[in-house]
Length: 208
Image (cartoon, rainbow, N blue to C red):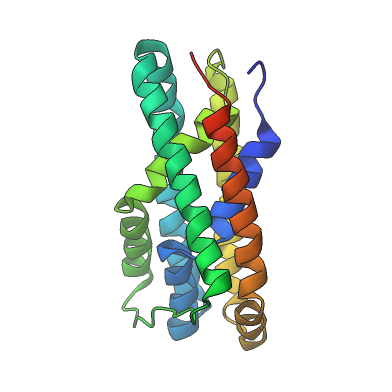
C-alpha cells in the first residue's frame, strides 16, 4: 500500500455511520421525543466520541504497525471478522426484517443529552474495533502525521454531517416514514459493502 485510500476510508466510515446503531438510534429517538435542539446536542456528544476513537485508532494503529507486526495481524483478522459479522447482521435484516425501534427518552437538559451521546459512543467496543479495521484497510505504514490528521478531519466532517442530519431529519415525520419504508434497501447495501470489505481485508495482507 503506497498511498492513502481516502475514497475507501470515507466510504467505509459513511456506511458504518449511516447504518442504524446505538448512536444513530439514540440521536433519532431524542430528536423525535424531545425536539431538534436535544437531538443536535446528542449528535455532538456522539461526534465527540467519534473523534476520540478515530484519533486513538489512527495513532494507535501506527504504533502497532511499527512496533508489533504480529499484533497488527491479529487486529486485522479481528477487524475482518467484525466486518463480516456486520454483513451477516445486515443480511439477516434483509431476509428477516424487524421493526426499527427508536429509544424514546425524556431529556432534562442539553448538557445531559450531550453527555449521554458521548457515553454511548465511548462505551461501545465495536466503535474502536471498526476504526482499527478502517485505518488498517486504507492507511499505509509510512504515512506521516499530517496524513493521519487529514483522515481524522475528513471522517469527522463527514460524521458531523451525518449525525446532525439524523437529528434534523428525524424531527420530520415524513422522513421517518420514508426511512423505515426503505430500511431493507439500506440493509442490502450494507450487506454488500461490509461483505466485500471483510473479504478484502482477509485476502490483502497488510504488513508494516
